[in-house]
Length: 481
Ligand code: UDX
Ligand code: UDX
Ligand code: ADP
Image (cartoon, rainbow, N blue to C red; front, side, top):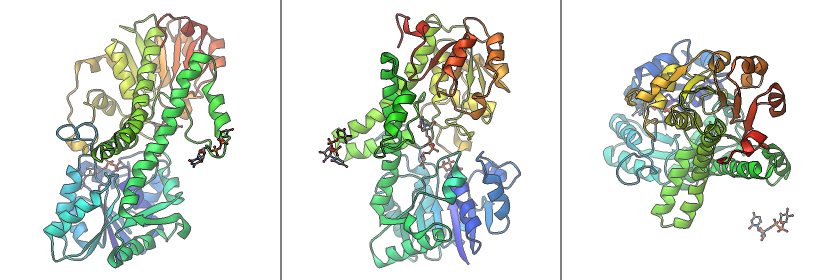
């Protein structure tokens, strides 16, 4: 029986390994992590991540050919294939601070693999890493254990949160990069055989190591670029009276452009986009490609612009001050159908409003109060460390934050309401009821274009929705953004 071990039981490692176990009954899969509570949660009724459909997959395989354990060294020693899916935070100090990937966790995993290995192993990069990481890892492995042969593969994961199970079941493609040597090719074939249990052969692409590593950064940069492009257009739509949804629909009909990933929003979030682009920018700079670096930097800059533009709209609409005013925040996760808040635009928007002394009442169907408070008090870039190592230093502004159990409680007596995640339930709220219990004039700031602007205006709300024709109220403000 082939044995697989995955180091890192996070958003990527957990679901990916669960799907391999489901589709490959002849393979034994162990997912290991240094975080005791995380592993305990994977072994409990309440999984550590919310992902539609994942519970059933895990329940079907757990205890049969899928195991979650903190006994990292034993499972690594026994495995034929070791996936590494640990955190790769952005460096906060030293060379490349604010851009380069911090490979501390990767390096410690590689050293541990070298220490405990007694049999040949295929080591697979699963977490996104800078191009040429495989080379560094190869060196660590081979210099620290000369008796064992290691083959390094890059097999980046393209799943999106909220749809992870569907994405894993029927991926657009699986990408495997390896060394172009006989042993390298053999390792690629071994990993290909795992995916071939359920993925059609023509969807399993094989490349050299560097192409695979770069493709992951490039894919995320291209996706994020589409969002920044439509978000840039949303500002122009507001200035001209065009409707960004109509523009997106019209351009998306061009088969060369395509309709997906053209939803204007308050900004993209998630653990990958910003981090991967900053990483790409750093790699370009290191290679002297300053123009290329500047080109991609703009994607992140427009995203920051979009978030601060939103805050400015809120503040300027509400008579240039939100000081002491209750503002309801609906949605805190970085997108719907996940409880993940990593790099969510809600953090920047909430901090912007708190900076203007607003009193926030936040509701999200999946994010816990503890997580929200942690996020609002965390320094930039500190989020991507194993959770038990994340600093927790709650600051004063957090006293201005209330976390509540539903949208109606959040909006009671509020002056304004901001929608920051596109949860389906926000489309179906009783907005008349909400209007009746809010202070007047009552404002809606829809950062996800989930509401029916015309209907809300009929009820009496003053509405700002990203990239939509402005309410006369907002348009006539002297300082409108
Ligand atoms: C373009 C638009 O495609 C068309 O919809 C619009 O109405 C007019 O402008 P056109 O300029 O005729 O049409 O040709 P197009 O095929 O878009 O190519 C434009 C340029 O981009 C060419 O120089 C082409 O060589 C180049 N190109 C195109 C690339 O370098 N790479 C590509 O992948 C595609
Ligand atoms: C992304 C990539 O899609 C995935 O392939 C990669 O493996 C990891 O990064 P993820 O971050 O989970 O996945 O979610 P995604 O659906 O890509 O959304 C990212 C952010 O962009 C979210 O904040 C989302 O709300 C936002 N978004 C997405 C928009 O604002 N508009 C869109 O049209 C699409
Ligand atoms: P991703 O979204 O890429 O899956 P996560 O942060 O959700 O990232 O998961 C990464 C996991 O890796 C965390 O649960 C963390 O505890 C774990 N981890 C980090 N370093 C190590 C290590 N050296 N050994 C085992 N697990 C590790």
